[in-house]
Image (cartoon, rainbow, N blue to C red; front, side, top):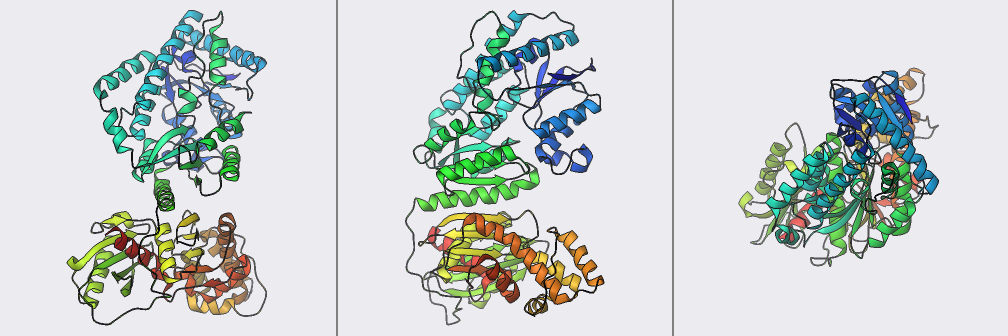
Length: 633
């Protein structure tokens, strides 16, 4: 066990980062445990001292140590990954008192004895700093108390005494920051207060989708609220903030050495991604799919290889339809990206269990009917994108009566309302005569007058199915994101990929490049069709690519050659998503990018597909939203 000693006598907490750190050791030595959770919105990566290619969670952990330095007497880490070892090195260089436990990867007698020695050494060091005599009986007493804490938490969870898993997670986090006696009192209070509520909470979960959460640590209850609000019930959370701490596979044993008991208890728990028998746990989760749960949501921090291996194993064994992979840094800014993916996954799972509603498809392409409007039902779909707001009104037969495309501007809700007024005026209706309005797109939650929201993934699938019925594969290139969707013969989503973290591979990237070349988008498309060499654009970042284009112009390269390089850069980005989903034909391309002939041709050559496109490809999402409005009504 590595250590760096400098006692902070005014502090009384031990900061720890891993569930393999026994709290029994911390509290029996007279300290309070303080679980440090890394959130990227707590820090700027440049300020931590870690490389930008290190897991964002570790940047957040390091910043948390610094923020709570006055409260924390010492830090206890584990060698869980190379990034955590780098955190240890930086804390040691800053003379922060820090220990690192080397957690064995296998469950053997030798491994258990090795870990027990480290635990005993840590306990004696902590007692020395606290000026108390080491007492193995006190350790044994705290083992019993924490087993009681885990038992009470298990009772609360199994009986669903709290309204949601997010509430349970929040309660558990508070308990992890307190002494075992405080935790027992708090949990007993919850049990007394919520006794008898189990039946009501069980009824609330009857129409939800049971799901397993696994992968990298999820930093806060807000993410769980997003998952539950999308219609899921979290029946199992395979993470270091849940099962690896709550697991009670081995009852506390009474032996001559409580440190050996602790070692056996902790090493026998649900294994994390670095453990030797991890595949056994993954297969056990997989066995619950379809029988007990309808999906698995896998979280992974960027640059985390360990949980990347987990994802490959799950998807190889269960298929893409069973697993939703989410790569996010855990910041508040990433919650919008998580929300769209989770909601789309919920819609995909629900649609797989329902028959295709509605009558026969009546449109191919977008044929706008401008005849007189009969007395019937009308529906509206509004797609709020980062660049434009797109809207359509359809009748009960799914015929498109009118459409609008407007700039989003600083107030998406205001632009949407103005657009709706213009559309109803065009078809001689009033807003009150619209039976139902459904919003989609990244700004869908901002539309106060919409009766419901549906993700752009589902709406694009439904819209394409209506306009181009034979389509099985969709590439959508929007202003600030791009997406790839695979649909089946009924129009249901079977798999999808999104790029909404970076402007590369989107319409915004094209606009910035066109500005650098001092041409408009249409001229850029024409340039790309000219014969000549391709000048590679090495930067995938929009900002750096803009500087690179200016530099290439200064070196005398032809604009047409540079444009070809720009299109290659965009198609490279999209190709990655296409390959992950698995290309099939017939394929369609939608969004503003579909109007760029040069981009479409380069993409076809790159991915080996032939794309068709609706007459007005920008309104496909709005068409799908209007169709959902019709179905819901």
